[in-house]
Length: 159
Image 1 (cartoon, rainbow, N blue to C red):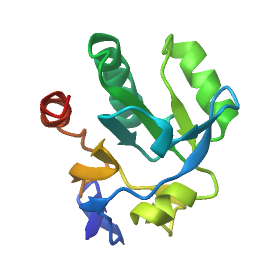
Image 2: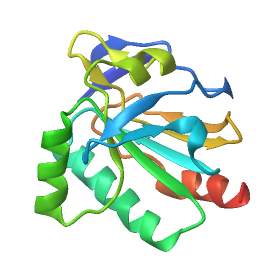
Image 3: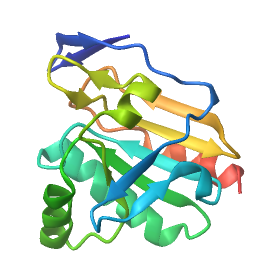
Image 4: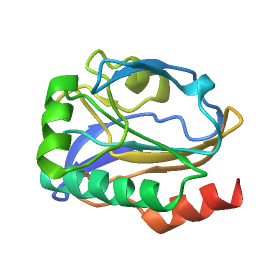
């Protein structure tokens, strides 16, 4: 899959979009280990390249708002930022949600999302139910926001 940035080719990836969701354990911004298989379904995973950029901030704030309104859905956000960067961003933005740090690309490699040229994760959203990927959106343009409503619709139907 080709990924562009402002319309110019940035990289190519081979993302996982169906089937079993590979399990992972990552630390959140509070240094707590979060393991996918231990979380209640359905789960929305919001993946973004860098919390300190405008579109990533918009995406994270929007899913934070949705998490407050949809208590039956588990929300995770994942980026390559350090836990400290994520904690600082959350404090500055008043955001209280689980953001996981994938600085070593453990999650990114399992899901085929690592944009190796920049060592960043491709912007994407997954809905997981009972260990299966039931929805995946991998954005081909890095500067675009995901389809929030579609991810929420799929997750709500999976409750």
